[in-house]
Length: 551
Ligand SMILES: Cc1cc2nc3c(=O)[nH]c(=O)nc-3n(C[C@H](O)[C@H](O)[C@H](O)COP(=O)(O)OP(=O)(O)OC[C@H]3O[C@@H](n4cnc5c(N)ncnc54)[C@H](O)[C@@H]3O)c2cc1C
Image 1 (cartoon, protein in one colour):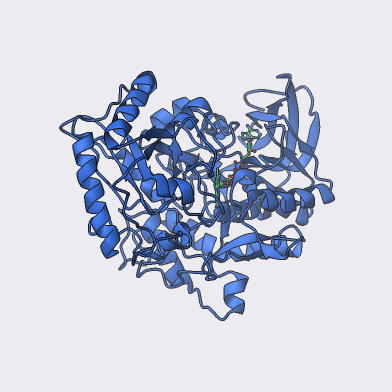
Image 2 (cartoon, protein in one colour; image 1 turned 90 degrees about the vertical axis):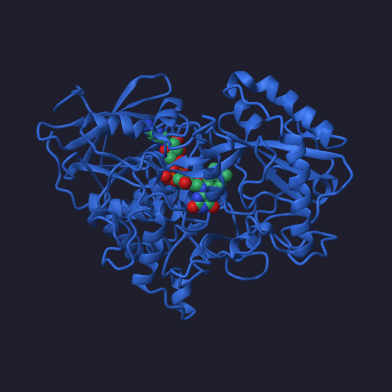
């Protein structure tokens, strides 16, 4: 043994699985299915991880529903779409690997090859009952870049769990986890809650043979893994040091479960793992005051509700299509102004009128968050009788937050620019064409906007002129994450690699704890849980084939 040498093993299994979200559950069930003795460790007091908080959507190329419907989701086309978004600066349409290096390309190709296999395997085991995700307009939910010419199957890859009570698909991580957890329990796979994997235990040959975990009393408990340890321990959203130093933009928190603190990064670094993709995350805007009060808020701002609504920066200017996808919108917060030496979009202000406050517009998840439900009030909503009052109230609120915002204030031009911005937006809304940011022009804008709001008679359902009369409302939005997606680099067998790109024997990973096969991309709704379930499965089928390790 190297490092720590336990005097005894408290528990023994063939395969140890760390974490109980999508990646961990898929790995545990798939390893059990192949005959392995499996033990799961979970740091929280509750099964399910961020996956349970999620929408439970999983994006599966060439899935059985597409095939049954006669839709050909061709391998080369799907890989091209994924490669183009995963590594936009490497992408070369003329190259046989689309400009990606061998490992990057093979991870994406393996995802295409194995995603449907993994889901069908869970389905066969009775552990998951999937069905296509249908949007409010009755169509299959579109991919986030359905409008790309590289995307030959723009709809139908996103799946959701079927609710057994209604027989219908449900957007809900609670149901996804219920199905997976029920299958884990039915197989009698032991799950040690409140057990945090703390250090890897390796033998003289550098093979990983177990884990030292800390229980709720911080006592060390030793778990032996005869064949392998598979990590599905989530990202590092709740490790402020890693967040500040690794992520490519300023973020104020995220809605992953609080236990996702990048533990694998520290553990795997000790055994020589190579780290990759650390700068990227599954981005989502967050309500600043909510995230300052609770670093792990219930949810992020997935879509921005309301048609008579805009987002502006400290100069009172719109900076993007407000109906764009959360992952893409959030990255606009990271723009740096080289002369002013500032992030002009560090915070964006969601501005809306009484009409939007009242009807909001219900998105595909049946919510109008962050606009409070009718009749409800929320302290993070700032109100003004007119735009002058709103600006004063907003500046007063920012003043209270200066110690946590890098002394952020509105620019003096905010109010006059805001008035001009609103009058320009109102022209676009009347015409139905957003000449600056093309709001509502791509399928996903419409899918996430939801149906036409009451009283909107304009040509583009995502826009309606903002009222000339107050009151007006503002919510301060900041950059955040659903969770991060960088960590140890894996190969297409989900083995964690060392600095020479050789597998560290006995060590596997899937989901947000490792460098995502998706690179910087968020291909579609379900683009995070899809790879987590798939690479959890891939890790398991390879882990069970590992030779039995000696101590
Ligand atoms: C509100 C919301 C909605 C979302 N909707 C979707 C969606 O519909 N589709 C989609 O694809 N993605 C969605 N996401 C993102 C998605 O939830 C995550 O990317 C995904 O669930 C990650 O799965 P995972 O298995 O990698 O990690 P998790 O589900 O986060 O599981 C990791 C687990 O590991 C545990 N853990 C951490 N460290 C240790 C340790 N040292 N020892 C033991 N256990 C440890 C954690 O406690 C946690 O339970 C959403 C996220 C949020 C917050």
